[in-house]
Length: 358
Image (tube, rainbow, N blue to C red; front, side):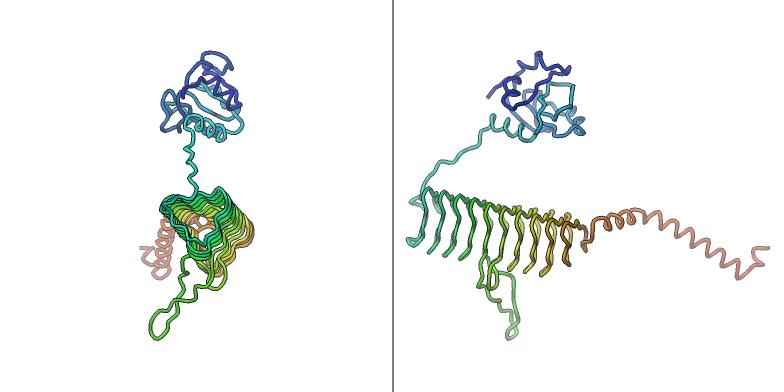
């Protein structure tokens, strides 16, 4: 698609300025053929700068024009000023690269669907997907190729299960959820006891209960409860490569970033954020609105609306003071050696005053 900057600005609801800062001129007729990031854009592409304090980065880009926040110009190339840069840029990208819409396929004859499964209207089950006994799938759900839905699962309306995801027995998934490729929901929890000199696996009689509007990232694992459910609250978003252990109960609107590990029986409130590579020990509670900084090692309860960081995780202000002190250690070591030398000299003088006099 080729479009002039004037037409694009009108579509985005923005104001077009040329390189001199005027709202008219040759910029209106300049043609754009694509949208790309600052690093990859070419002379016929439009790019974005999402804040005024990043405008200087535009000078390193080859982009022919940019979508910018109000008050950014004038700049060295045409710009379209909009209140919400990311929304406008996303609209531009969709115009140049429309999303690929999959054709509805219904229940494919190449899928394996048990005769006891209850499939609602407008459900797509792609070739080579497997649906077990007593499974219930709600209206408009999509099960992609290679996904395996084991016996007794319940899948809500509008939920999408991507290729090669596995739902173990009796998993419950709410409405409008996204479960990405390779995710495993309902695997056995990692619990053992020693019986007759060998490890014996503990009871695995629970299930996983996922609320509405939950997203589960690729290759994430969520283990079933021992006797009852492992629970994921409504609107919680879980990134790729996350591990949620048995009996955990996560609240609503949690944001769990990549490579987080949450040990068994941990609970969280609502609006909790766990940044990348956090590790949370078992049987702790993370309060409403708490934030766990990247790579935090959490071994105790975290109060509501508290930000913690580090290993062991402590309150952010205290951690910053520690880090500031650590940065001064080389200077402090040098000072300490100087003081030690002075003390040693004074000690020699005290023990042998005649030597100083000589």
